[in-house]
Image (cartoon, rainbow over all chains, first blue to last red; front, side):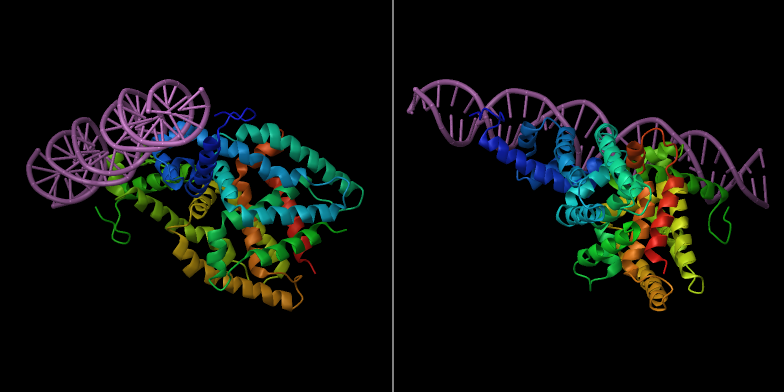
Length: 205
Length: 205
DNA sequence: CTCCGCTTTGACCGATTGGTCAAAATGTCG
DNA sequence: CGACATTTTGACCAATCGGTCAAAGCGGAG
């Protein structure tokens, strides 16, 4: 039975949610080419043909994942408030992005895999959607710097550095833990302290 | 004919070099599971059986690559001089790592792929070889900070941040270029200026 | 109950995968 | 040259890949 607004039945919603969650797990740990439809189906407790009843192809699942997750992923950047206190806004952004690495490491690794291997699917979105957003926020930061409310530096590379440092703790989690050793149960508290110190010294006037 | 020291003929040296170079290209852009031995063979201008005459398996090529490249990859960290001027030593380290991202992006992506997907092969090396080295260098940096020659901060996360920021420009090169737009032909000069500023403000007493 | 549309499945397909093997080609030496 | 080791190749193999299909199972409305 249809449910007018979304055009999806209850069962469809449930199964599609299970599939996307399973696909997120499998794609993020194996990459697109390394993942198999069978793996995803097993992780979602479905048979392979049953999975392909809900999605036409492996590529379709991957695209669907990237599309629906993209907004969530850049949301914290969008929420930086031009009217707020500059340093607070940027430090909050750092904290939010680090929290996302802690709470959504699979999403982080999914995008990392995609970009690392050429961004074949997500590439256009980077040029058409992400770039204007970065332009806008970089201009805002540049204004803050001109007004003497932040120490001057390249705003675009500042944004890159926040992405790089925060996502590092999700994408390279294995390395971080191996290097810190088994004594460190959770690297994130120290990471947050360090990153806040770093960007405070970088930006505070 | 053997050549006593290495146990390799001239042809073997040439072909193995061609294979490792081709494999670096293919593995770094497709990951281990995404790469095929046919691709590597074609990139090395060899037939598949001929390639498997020099290496017993796909996994053997991958292992060989990671083993031989690991030393090169951590060399700049090893070369930080405990007797040098602290800030100079660390800024030089940043410059060297960024230069490696510019000149050896394939190597960077090879390691990024391996770690991102669980570090199944390289994991033990991280615990047994890299961790002691980081411990040693972190202790050195901590001493510098105690002596008042650097602003204090977590030395291990400082090292992580240098890895993260410099390798970002190799691993996420596609994203960086898409976000900066086609007007920017080479992101590296601005990146170097930004990173030197960042770590100078972070560390200078 | 019957009927009908949605859901699930086992069997199967062609293509591609990593890897083998025996034979042929090539190189290297006296 | 002739003899022997090294190198190269086409044909081939079992396993796995993404995807198809017809048939069976299922739930709810009448």
